[in-house]
Amino acid sequence: MRAKTAISLVVIIGSLLAISYGIAAQATGVIPQTDLRRLAEFYANNTLNLNDKYLWAASPEAVTAIVWDYRGFDTLFETSVFFLAIIACVAALRLKCPQGSRAVR
Image 1 (spheres, rainbow, N blue to C red):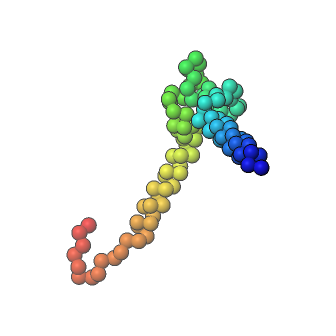
Image 2: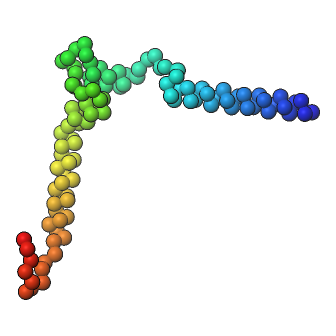
Image 3: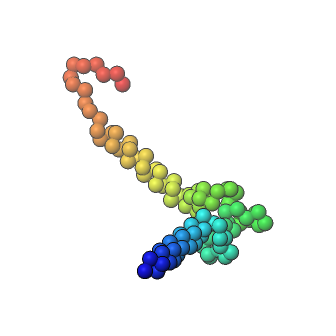
């Protein structure tokens, strides 16, 4: 009976180790993925394409190229709205000075 329990335990631990190694190897890149998805291929070709400078965003980082080249106006307008909201909050929450006190402006 103990032999069957020991064999079962070895099989279970071996299976868990094999599954864990497979997951970790894929996640860390030990097992390289040979093909790119279409979206990844598009961004890779349009952010750092050394062969065709016409399609090149001139940014060594793909995230920077996407944010500033493809979503530049969106980012600019979001930043403008954010700064205008801060200015509006400061203007709305200005406190009046009590009469008779000299406030430095």
